[in-house]
Image 1: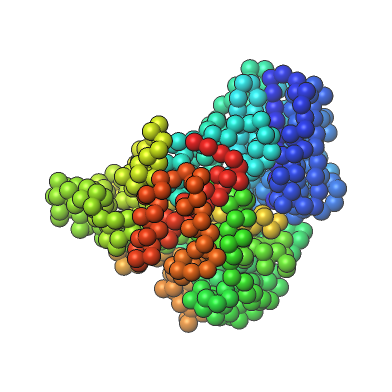
Image 2: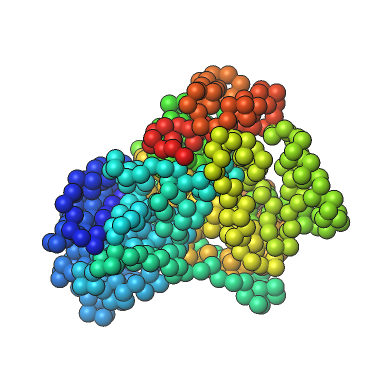
Length: 620
């Protein structure tokens, strides 16, 4: 796990200072080593910050060149099957001089070119400069665990693990992208290739980019797709599916436990992390697990559930107590998260990472289980909604939805439900994650007449066409919510603490299994969630394990906003004279919160945006 920065140009570059400044901006991603390399013609520069995980010796230093010096690489992430790929490459005549997976990636590119991506099982973002072909090749892993931003302008391509590295150059523009802002205010995150700043992009998950130095042009393509559900999945045998699930998860955990530094497991006592623990003890005689309790908030305490699992499997278990989050931490996270994010669970995620990093450098978590196997509560609600909406005429549903949006104040209980009556669930999805509807977004930005309302059309375009509602919902959450919210949150919060977090459930073989073979009836129904995965817990976990518990990371937002430093920060930020949002609309949201309406997450979203905007000096 590391940080990468680079630049390539169709002409030689006379100014090289930015590369070092960009690398310094992401020191937290790699405190163990740093490196910088320039091509002899001065057109390509690569920089790297290393968090040493595999081959801790100087042989793992980056940027790394192959023996011919024709290929140069900077790599962030882990290739879990690198030993198998290495054996295959040795059989083809390649030799190796380190124990790192980075050298394997470089040799794989020499052997297979851009098709090397199909050989990798891992989480990664990397760039390879090919001096013979005069190209720069960038790629990102299938699920989007590792980030990659880029800026392409006037025959020049810059890229970095974090946006702040690009912005280390004060001469680059910082204009807010109107479409991205609208998506943020609606969804709470910014999807796909969009970036909050105009002219910048994220390389989407499962995509690659090739930059041609001769022409200065870049092309982007998708190299992997989530598979279609097989035709025979409806009649699939549950026992066979359970056996395959167990085998795949077992091997994923085995691969991801490989490291030359201490490895732990983030054990919440929920289904996903408990199953990861069950597999880990098969491959190590000493497994370290960590659970977190939050000081002053007993309802967030996971330690009793985690303790049960740790005791059952005999792990070396540590219970840690996180101190309460502070307003100062909120401001620090606004700086760390390159784009504004409305997910308040960034607080406990950072606190967990901070504590666990004191004991180990790598931690395995349970991310991905909900999206792959139907674990979210809104899947059951969508199925109920699908059944009940068919009984109400569309014209009547549309009328109720329009009335709710125009008459009911934001945050009033039932408003979102009424608004979602207008959705056609035969081809789309109700906007369960909506922060602000179109009307409220217009009001918030009424001073900016050029602001576009792009969120609804962007979201519709990203919903996979599938006749099965649950398939549409889980696929959307996998490619959008997981990739652009959950994984971003985990990456930034963990890397700020120089901790590598791995997700065995996001092994691409498990992803293909979940979407290609598991029928919807074994994912969720109107009354059950995560059905197949919970069947596996019955086989592997103790009888007293609570299979119905669903507790994600959360914070006591309502109590935060009643009094104290968080209330002061929110109110001061949103009522300041230079706040970008409409003062009357914001005041209505603040007053509504005091009157008991559920505006906490909305106010958090606006506050995070303002803190981010002022940090980076961005304007609309």
